[in-house]
Image (tube, rainbow, N blue to C red):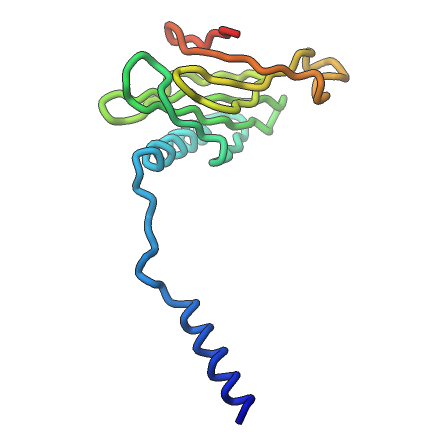
Amino acid sequence: MRHFFLLFIFAGFLASCSQSSGTDHVNNSPEANIKNQAIALAESYAKDQQKKVVINPDLVFTGLIDEDEHQDAIVSASTIQGPFSDLQLILIQKDGKLMLSRAIEADMNILSLKNRVITAEVPTRPRSSPLYDCLSCKELADYQLSGGELVRIK
């Protein structure tokens, strides 16, 4: 009888875990919407490339990039066919939709986007150097979009 009682409680527990509580939410926040649009644009861009492009959804940054007050985005991706390189897609919001402003192949690891400043980790050695990827051979650099170009400001 004791085993039957424990089995009954265990079965009830499993049944309650497998049912939706009705509190599941889809994230419809403005930031999530911008990120979803950015990923969709990045996927579309990647399909049109001659190279294979890997997009990491965790490397989508949202915030203000250009001079207006609309949320923009940067998608960091990597090309894996041919010479490996980092790819930054700068997406600017116009008329409520994100549009590709620039695609930049540059050795940089975007860390943040805040107040129109893009902070990235960049190598201090050329790609041909054996020290290219050493931890102490990287520096932080700040960039801004100016006249459609990504310009280093620090």
